[in-house]
Length: 587
Image 1 (cartoon, helix red, strand yellow):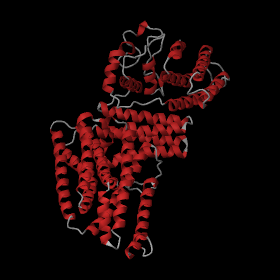
Image 2 (cartoon, helix red, strand yellow):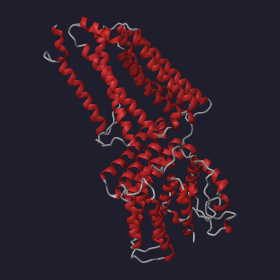
Image 3 (tube, one colour):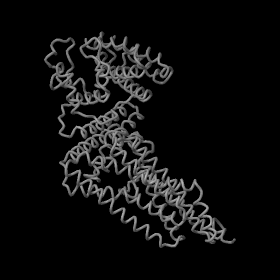
Image 4 (cartoon, helix red, strand yellow):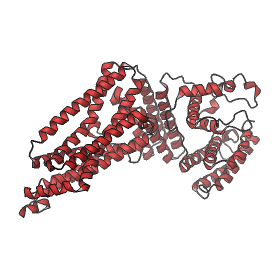
């Protein structure tokens, strides 16, 4: 029997590193969840005495090992395994044991930080090559267990197309590849890297499903991750593990869709928003604890959207004019906010008459631009980052920029209301000499520009991956044209601002900073929503304006509304004859 040979895993299990022990525990819990039904029937009857004894032995050894692990001893996970052991000894119905084992497996994954999806895009082309090099001799070209050497082994190689493997995802195959099955011909593939193991496991999973995708390897890899995470989310929800269900739903977007999003938005921004909205809906439904059928229906619709996404990104490379116009539009859009911020800052600091403040602003945006150039030319680190890391970086930078903009904007606004202008000029000059304020000016310039540079690199990198030859030139010309246009308009705007009286310049600049704060506040909170750190509550308004940072969610709109109310309250207070800065005019 194939399964009894798994018992030979335990000598290795006892001497393995904690991370490997945990992985094997998860693997065996999943094994119990899927195979207990072959040992015990619905009416507590033993269907196969030999297999039943295996199940008893497995759970006993798992429990012993958990109790030897300092991180797991005395935890809820130990209690759950005790409960599984109790149910197996009682010969409980298969569904009961299956649900308990799946819940415990998911809890262990979360507790020990075991990754159930790859950190990088899956490369199925690499997986196919690895399969041909390592597996085809035993499992056959189609994975049916009929390779040239298959007759030499007992038990025979696994038939990946067998219906008994239904529900086995890439994580299952990853564990088999990583750990092997001692005592059988299935050895641990420890000569492979972790990424290679994931590539091979996803390829085997596709053989199991009988799919032959026509997508590019990279795009297909991201979609496979999204599909798998979505399936895992539904399974966790059905087993009652709602936290893991939510985590998998977040992973479906961050690890599967978010890396492809720039390509989707270039080809159909409306569809990209629809797909993102659908995945957020799944998280919302999980939090609302809706009936399983309702969540399954939404998951099926989302699978359909993922298939459409695959078809969309696999369309042939667009025309040269399209590539030029898209790169021009992306750069111009992202540069607009940064240019508006810099024009405002430079107009203000030049009124100080302090060269150090001007240098601070130029140093801030120059450093942000330099980091963007380094990210583009040297490592492509932006694309190597996980989706969660990208969104956290964008969200964190945006919200910090909001604080700096509000601080400086409120300072200018309140000073422009002072009755004695001469006193204000004296304070302004003194302020410009303070190092902390010069540092704040440089920080505002850096934060505002870095966020836009970061997004530009992500979008243009995605375009570049699909562009070749003349298309790369068209992309470059689009960026160069947009940059030239922004540069010329910015220079003209700075010159024009020099003609505006300082007091009016401060008032205008303060409201421009408030406007940018409004935009970045919405974008920052939405980025954190995509990581799952901030909940998502739809308002059913049916609109979305990414450029303005306006999204149809209670959290983003609520924060922006609170900001508007706060600023209006400041305006009202300062305008009162008995309050705020107006009192200073009496001197």
